[in-house]
View 1 (cartoon, rainbow, N blue to C red):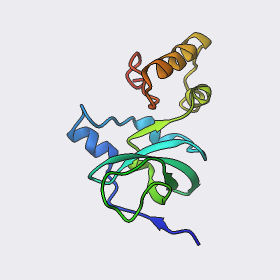
View 2: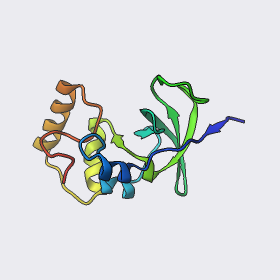
View 3: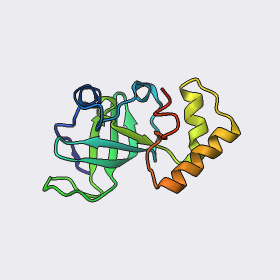
View 4: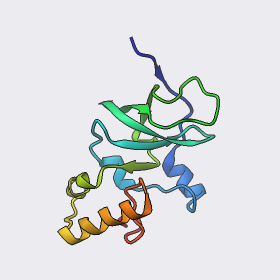
Length: 138
C-alpha cells in the first residue's frame, strides 16, 4: 500500500493576505474541478513545489511531488502527498486545457486570446496559468 504524506501545508489565501507580492492566490481555484494530471503548487512553510494530481476525494487532493525538493523532508520527488484546495498556491493546465478552464469559471475565451496565452507561456517558460496580460483573470 502506498504511503501518503501530509505536512503543515500553507494556507494560500492567508499567505496572499500577508505577502501579496510573493504569494498569488486566486479565489476561483477553490471552485475548479481538479483533474488527474493537473499541476498544483503547494508549500510546506519552507518551500513551494509542484505536485501532479493523481486522485481527488471529497475535499482532499492526492498529488505526486513533481520536482526535486531542497529541504530534508520525509517526502521527495515522486512521493504522494495529501492536501486541500486551501493549499493551492498555483495551478497549471496545458495551454490546450485553458479553454476548458475558462468554461469552468464561467468565462468565454476567444481563439485569439487562447493563442495569445499559448504564445506567452511558450515564450516566457512560465508554468503558471496566471498570464501577465490579464494578471490572473481578475
